[in-house]
Length: 468
Image 1: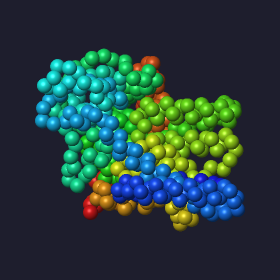
Image 2 (image 1 turned 90 degrees about the vertical axis):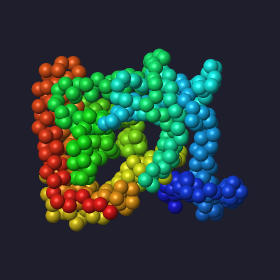
Image 3 (image 1 turned 45 degrees about the vertical axis):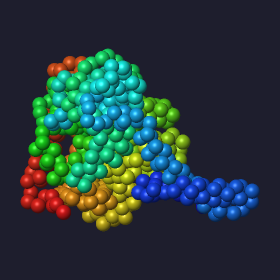
Image 4 (image 1 turned 180 degrees about the vertical axis):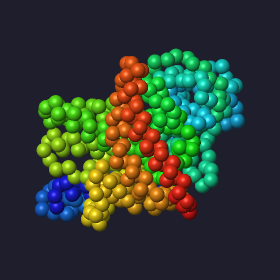
């Protein structure tokens, strides 16, 4: 058996271990027995050097066991979040630092604060604490990444609602407590990573430039496809995206990252940059961009796979999509095993990519009658392939399916690279001179108007989306 195939099976074995342990409470006696048997088979293979199948079986068993252990470690992290012990009926004061940019929604803003100290209501002495708290606040005043805050309010434990396991959903990010609309005070600023602070500042400058060079909702649309920001997109347009099945274009999915990575590589090759220089420059840009836009599961997955494509090109080796997809998933699950079961974005992202890798090649010959002009055939093929693989999860999780999704994706994705290109140039030029940005933004305005027109028209089609 080829080493690449063994490597693939080992990764799958680790992922299966995490999956089994996320659904079932496996006794440590069974986990220990699996580890011992796997280690014994590996040792026996090492001594004999002929029973290759035994060695592979031992490796699979060891990594399957490691997957179960890794999820158990993740669950044990809850015990280290000492801030949970202060949740109750009395108000407390927390002191901590914002770990990410504010998540601005239509009705509120959500802040993730890593707590360092707690002041209970009955004490006058600060106590050392640890853990992350999700704080719901009004949209103003505005706080930024790295701000140290004091918040006073009721610390609550999240609860399930409407059949949705909200506690498990938050736990995947290490959040076990909530606080709603507390009294807040800024203690200090400019804490945290200076690199992330600069990247978030650059993101804010780009967003403000887009708002200067384009009207609404065009500016909000551009912020969505380039930066993944949906805060200022009007609800009617969000509903139209959902009905037509193109919400992924404003969620900064792997499609967007692929366009960016491919554009960078092409530009560097045009300037005769060496394969090594192209790899490291592109890898650095993708890494910084991933940090700037928030590192969601789909972005991390796309970034990892993009890096593997660049590495294969640099080393002159054949790129294997299934191995790359599984490797990207295993790395993400190793870092945070809870996402395998509790992160729908992670699940949808990987199922959609699996559709492109396994379903699209088999459906390709059936679409040969369509023209390839503007990528119509490939866009329709990729849309249907991705929809087929994510359909069961969409029905189970959301209970809705868009019937016009193939048509809307075919019409929109064909021009999306040009929209992103001219939109980015307009935003970049607008940072230096608003007048030049407005002139360049005229082209982006035409493309964005087309996209909005497509989703508006198709969302009005009777039975465009059905509910189960």
